Length: 592
Ligand SMILES: Nc1ncnc2c1ncn2[C@@H]1O[C@H](COP(=O)(O)OP(=O)(O)OP(=O)(O)O)[C@@H](O)[C@H]1O
Image (cartoon, rainbow, N blue to C red; front, side):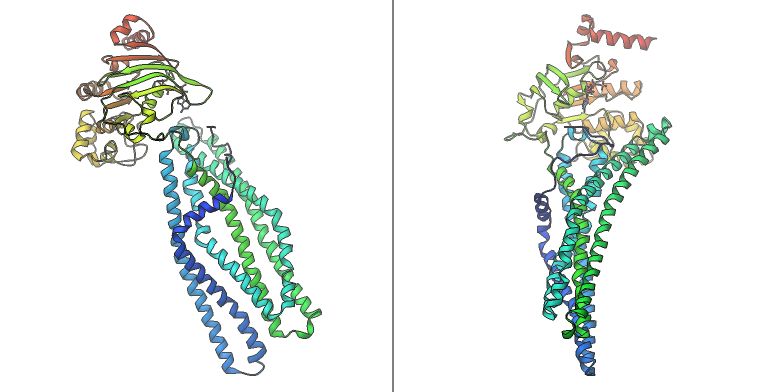
């Protein structure tokens, strides 16, 4: 999968097609009833709107010359009633379609979010998160107008155009033909514009995505930016992405704004032709009332055509975003249950790596044939230099990535053939980055097991020695923390994540640098609790502080994606290899 950065335009793997329109219609289908009802209302509204000029014609040509007061009063009342009817219909349409539009957006957001949950680490590794966010939030929002007004108005406008033509032909077929001259002229202008608009809107959505990605990255990296006093550089980049966005916006809007004047000019030209032909060619058979009514119909004919132009702008914009929304919705998780995957039964915790080869990106093998066995209940430590592949190994146990070659077995079951849920549901994982969700400390720990009682949460916190610092907060376990865990120190965040992993009560426990930021005194206390707790569980521990893994049943020393040494602490020290060197260096440093 190609990597993308905030300043790199995303290319679409698949262009716009009728398939996208069909997909959009699938979302609208459940709301057919209110949508068709609103379309029906709009058709009635068009008919009422078209009555106006006819009433004026009758008033001008018949009632006023004949001083027919009763007829004139009746026509006025009818005219007012038609205006009231139109306004009632408008109100109801806005209310109903507003609701329907929002409901459709909720359905689309739901489906997008469902797929986001399924997508593997690789997907998130390879693109800025702001670019994902923009699809779920901004692009979906941009469909609101199309769904609330666009389609209903489209049908009403088409109906209105046809009905107006009928009125025009009934009134005077010669003038009706004259007023249609504008249609091919309009087509000749609009056709070449279409391709330009489509490109401009695609560019706009790409630049919006880039801008979002940079803002999101800047917020996440704000502390580093301020620490290095790089605000100006950051602002310069921001100005650049904003300028690119605004240029793209201007480009798209400039083309959109061409649509309306073209239509207006063609409409004016048509009216002029109607007047001209009425005065110079068909002068004998035309009354004032007929001409006034006819010109009113010509404007009414061009009104919906102008609306169609606006609808066209909306749909061009929406389609550029829809392409990306559906692309994300259709993104197939590369890590998913194999066909016929079975449930992993309750495990004992035997983990076997058989000649596992793995690459994040095709060209660079990270694990180059890793084999080891961890027996149930064994405590396995994985050590090695930075970037040697330790985290990669433990990420593979939970199948966050698919391996390129070899096999990983748990209790003899190949993990690629069992369901992800049954596999991950039996593991407790504490990752290097102790992520804290916004909410209370209690909720954050309970994330490990949503069914756990408050007492169980507190018990887990006590085991990892987090209870005391939690209780030192005024609100204890109910203290609200945010996404970055800003109220908490890094060590405190680690302890909370630790408690979360334990609460899952897993047969396999994975601890990646679980205690790297915890003071030595707390760590000693924690180790005592842990010894008891890890009994009966297979655990994988990664720790740079080697004193914490000395007592492990097995230490795996990995370098450059290969296991170089494996054994107990004493055995590896006796071997005098890489582990011994690492350990003695650390020991010397501590002594110094
Ligand atoms: N998501 C990723 N995409 C591409 N390459 C990656 C990714 N994560 C890690 N790598 C690469 O894989 C190699 C092993 O990384 P890994 O995180 O497993 O190392 P580690 O031994 O855990 O290091 P550390 O001690 O620093 O945590 C590194 O060279 C790293 O650049």
